[in-house]
Image (cartoon, rainbow, N blue to C red; front, side, top):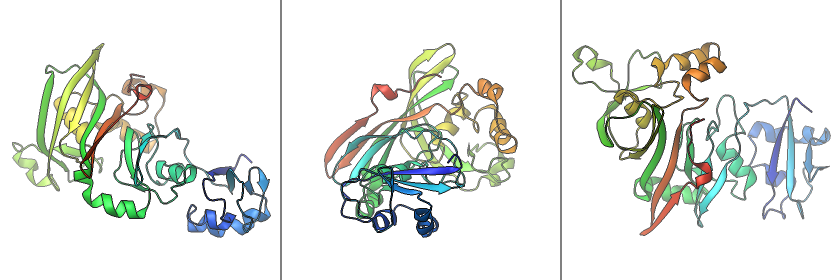
Length: 315
């Protein structure tokens, strides 16, 4: 069944449900509509035994749905639960795992994996990380928790710390950079943001929506012309760390947009990248990781720090 995509669901506290009841909130509407035919083809199974949609999940541990002719990009699916309370959970997201559906990945995403592998099939993302960025991500366990916490996210998350390996060794030990960031009219990479240069009068009207941004950088270690930085976000703008460090002359190792004038990002779209390209970039993904979160949960401080097993290292 090499042309079949295998969706595995852990059955946790749902043993009173039928197969159909269990799968309805966990599949797309299109795939749920295919289930009768998939059952006829014995592509739906519970603990490796084919089942019907009306079968009860009593004593079941795992449910499998094989989707014919469904293909997704290969990604690192080794997410981990780091912390939880009754409404929230903090998880570790690996590099190159998208947080939600993309054109290439519908089910192999962080949120889909959490929904499949835990009892929280209605889990919601409270914020996001770029696909290539690893680290701590905060989720609400259900819609009610999402409604409660998402409007209060700025009060909930008191501090965000990232770690980044960059090319070059800064001449400073600590530095706070405050600037405006904006996408730019006519940019070859539409998603790229730029530090607004007020002295460049000719490009003043090219900046689309400048927004204030501020980050506190600190050098943690150096190694052979490269440096490990701690980056404390004081604001939360798109690509903030990456754009600011590139502007300062210390782009992230592996950054396809903000290093090497973005040519590897454009090449990846046009023809893909090879091992020679990755050797120049220094890594197959940019070396950025959300390393710590400080939460304020109704007056209680919660510190979430990545364990040493997930320490960001040079590849």
